[in-house]
Image (cartoon, rainbow, N blue to C red; front, side):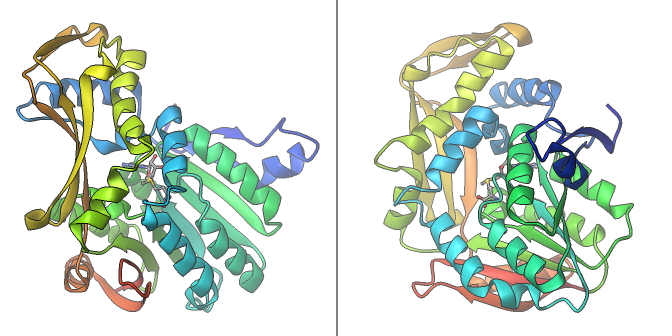
Length: 345
Ligand SMILES: C[S@@+](CC[C@H](N)C(=O)[O-])C[C@H]1O[C@@H](n2cnc3c(N)ncnc32)[C@H](O)[C@@H]1O
């Protein structure tokens, strides 16, 4: 598969298939989440001390479905508040643009919150091109079809692959202005230096006057944060453990998932919730396709995710450090979550 090659359309999907095919395009970008990348990440991460795995590998089909269910949990306030902020302020968000923007979204998932914004943009400009980027191709396809069915003015070019590879592809294209979206507190998965590097990547793929709408979780009481990642129904635990099941499915792993415990705790010094999988006892786990054995002592963990929480000052420093200025911001009454619009300088 070559970089930027179209791999599928909406063809053959029902009575309006031809019309949908004209409006939905899936494009595979090199650097996507191939089996080899996953194998390499597992080899490196489980061969390290302490052990770790990159959180982007949560999102295979099973993991993406679990994440969608997490978004509806009472404890997981992030989606609920962000969706309310987008719904309430959507017109103001799109009215920043004098001419029709192309809307590019990093880590779009199901695009369920984005729909509000797309609806407002279609109402304001008539026709909108939406370019969601996600490592999960099946999710992108379902989301793109649902959106084009619902919004007559929408065209979708979905980029299947890693953020950086997709941004490199966009850098070569000239259309503007662009509105970049990075929602769901996904920036929080990056350590500060990596967050600035990714924001600079967005900066380099954009032009002066383009904008970035960024959704971020704010520092708050540890009990609220820990409840959000330790829900009573155990869905987040399933989501975390799905990484081990994925290793079993795709790489011939022999993990006994019941011998690991999900743990999420807030590290106030680092302003982040850390997720881990904790080995209940000493064990050795073979991973056939990698020809490796991962040895665990009792209580040893695999670090699977960081979710950084920010202060407003830190967010403004991130903007300044990556070539953006804050133009507008929206926060809920409790001050738990913030959506900000940055302008690229
Ligand atoms: C936390 S979910 C957020 C989904 C959605 N934006 C929301 O707010 O609900 C993160 C999404 O980003 C995607 N993702 C994670 N890392 C990625 C990467 N490096 N490149 C492309 N997509 C990525 C995942 O597949 C997933 O759909």
